[in-house]
Image (cartoon, rainbow over all chains, first blue to last red; front, top):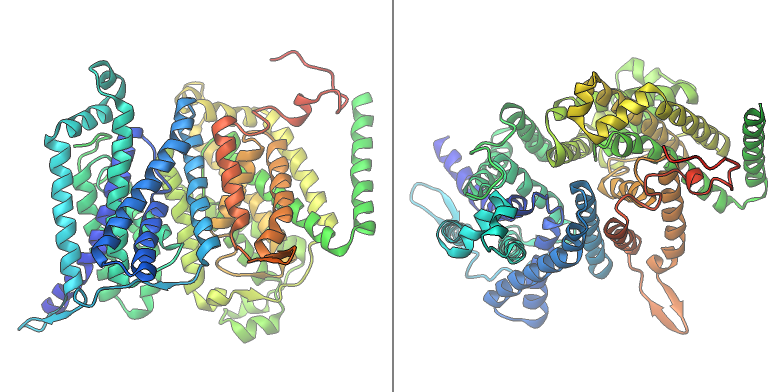
Length: 299
Length: 341
């Protein structure tokens, strides 16, 4: 049983990584703008499509595919920021108005991709050297791609946390998140900071998209919906605005989902989404501000 | 006295127009008109919570699904239920007339919304939106998996056809009138105060939670009735019937038309329905001067999204901008121009 449990934990690593990377994007943008970027799941989806198109149709190496995913996701993220959020915010729109606009952006991009590529599932090209199964002496099955995904995610998480904690721009970011007007008074260009937050969040979504493609091997235009929502739930659970908290909550949700499927009878596995939402409800009921540190700022 | 006569004339003209529509419109256009009417009913119901009370909920898809399945189970032929579902005997044998089924559907939708949303009332702002969205996903997910009741992904088919133009537009008129009266009453004003400032409303002695629940109850009752009418028009229901796409289209209708007004949602519904009809050929693909344009599914939603974003940027309160149609054009409706209150 212990071995089984350990196996489930290993299986959860890559899914948890995907959610953690997505959650950071949500939490950063919420921390700085006070807005849910509802279109984050679509940024993720477009990143995956960029990698897919480049690798499958151009035949480029996998590493270029990752770069394309990151670049494409960043481009879309900045596009959304420049042409949807900024015009709204410049007119002092209410939070709700901006939310509806981002809701529109989300559905718009998803349907645009459906329009171009159809809603069918496509196979994501996984390089064979990444997709090998190792068997340990005690009988655990470890897929090398899971290790890769987890390793890359861990490095990125540490890098982003350090960036926010120690670099000048990171300090400026925290200042804007804490009090945008005061930050502006001491000479922080809050516009640049907002752009930066979108760029970092979208880039992480791009990495997450490649991880998703590698891990599940499929992609389609509506893949961003559930993944994005689960990432957002992770951001909420982690105490929104709290970057490490979001990452940890991402792993918790990933693990929770995998254990839910692994430990309960198979006929229950289809109601996974319900389980995640009930988990969210319970936690929000007990601690409305999330699991870690109740704050609306980046720590 | 004069007002009453005008009111009567208005009603007579309304029903005369409906009679003309029923007798002279082609079948396809009549269906479209009915579709528009029931969409407007749902939009009015949703607008009560999302517009007037300003608690933005995306959970109406879930409660509408509850209402839709209710009316389907209550009116489906007994043989069909026996063949495809494993229902308890009393439910299998139960068959009620359409108006009663619709009423029960509305009530169950109302109940579902209260039970599901009460926990969410602890949350505010965007957290509430998220939680309400969860209701959609949970109900949809359960509808897919509780096979003995819902027949899984395939859904229920062969629902008897009851919806016609009289039901839809009669109910639309009644609901419109009731909402109009409600918003002019003490209770309606309380909702508007809550939408502006919840603390202020509490200080003024308004029971905020009670009025929020009231708003949700009435709103989801109306949208539940809309869902029931939809079922008896489309003659089937499945878990994806009121999925995120439907929710999105309704939100777009309300936001484009104008939240917090009665005419806004109806106008928004009309704009989107007409737009859909215009874009439909593009979505299905067509041949132009020997060039074949391939079908592009989702084109309608892309246009809706673009329109929605543009409206949100340049006119955040929607086309009506917080005023009713008859306040924009008082002459046209025979009203005296009121000094702004």
